[in-house]
Image 1 (cartoon, rainbow, N blue to C red):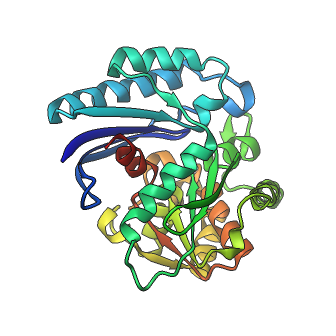
Image 2 (image 1 turned 30 degrees about the vertical axis):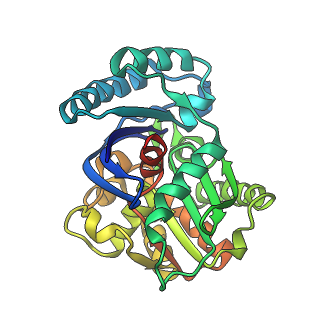
Length: 313
């Protein structure tokens, strides 16, 4: 057993996993898993820079995570940063801050590396399942980007494209500093056009339609699952490996896009940090399912964070 810690810092959230890894059995025993919405990617699509207040929110979460890592006595720690910090001109400020707090330098990985970690984290525990047919298409819908990975036991092809729930919301739904509530048909069509263009790009290198099982990762997908199940609160055990039909995803997406901020905030399983961006995230998922003809999505709570932990072990 090796006690490891993994941090995934994305555009919308930063997450920590502390676990005991047993490479011989392939088991990852979770000790602590937590998530904080920090919106690191605030304004990056428009300004090309990480905002000072976004950096401070992220550093505050890092200080909390440093205490947790120390408490559990993790032997190894890996910090991976994704879309927002990859795009920012001032990412050196981010790197220095993380190094000072956690003692490790964040690795600003490429989209292809991000996809590899996501695939490993999502599919390692599916080995031997007879009810799921390979190849898998693993889709990780993040805040700034979405990763597509097709593979069996190993990755066959991967691509990262710049559509995510935060990027699409900021690009198309923000007017005079406020998110449209609800968005207009024209705004929704503009998001859909960006998603379709991104899917065209992904299909140049990833055979999306060859996959037999769609596995969906990250907060947009898990939140749609929670809504579909009408959970009284967010329950990862109920969400993990749940299956949501395309018709149900469409129904939920349409409701999210015509609802108000107050109506979305009243959903008991909705994280406050997702209220304004969940509509765009759900639309990304729906567009993918329609493009490849997927009848359902298998939802996984295990994702890039678990893949990072395995890479450390």
